[in-house]
Image 1: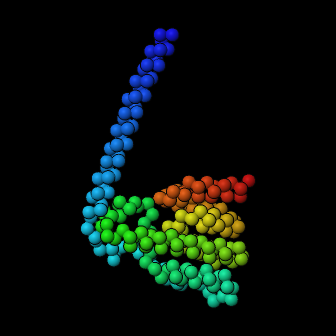
Image 2 (image 1 turned 120 degrees about the vertical axis):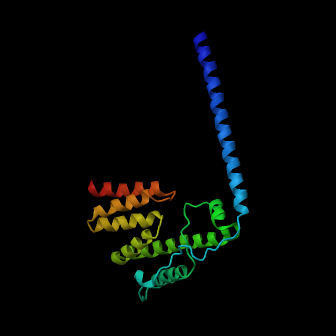
Image 3 (image 1 turned 60 degrees about the horizontal axis):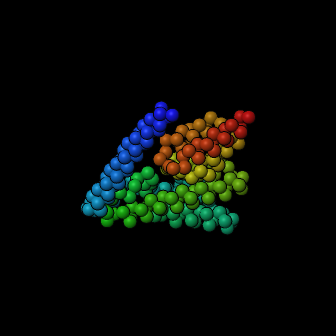
Length: 204
């Protein structure tokens, strides 16, 4: 009994030490965040005219004249998305944006990043429509382009992978998995899992 009691006391002491360290680390982290946020809010506005804006020439995508009302709408929505200022700022926090470009630019930069998200959704919807319609080559062109500019939409990856498998080119799926793994998207684990499952289903 004394041995068990001593072990229990030692465990309580160890637990308290660990708890204090964790609490101190959390406090330091919070103080560091508040310090950086305060500094960010005081950062002066900088020139953002020369940032790496995404510009998509229409000839890079398979636009076409069509009598299909749904596709016409999808193409029109994409053209509108392409006409806006677009930046891929995924993985960059608001605090970092303010520190780098100034507090006064945060609203504009956030909008440009939102424009990027909208662009990716438009590309995914159009490509998905074409895939279901049986126009796989056009769909593939759009999906490959979307991933080349940083798409993190799961459907974009899985539909493109399915096209490769439909064309009996499973070797092209691994580069998609590698791209997803190396991205900063919080969805990358899910994307990798689904692509891996597609490959397993194909080979089984």
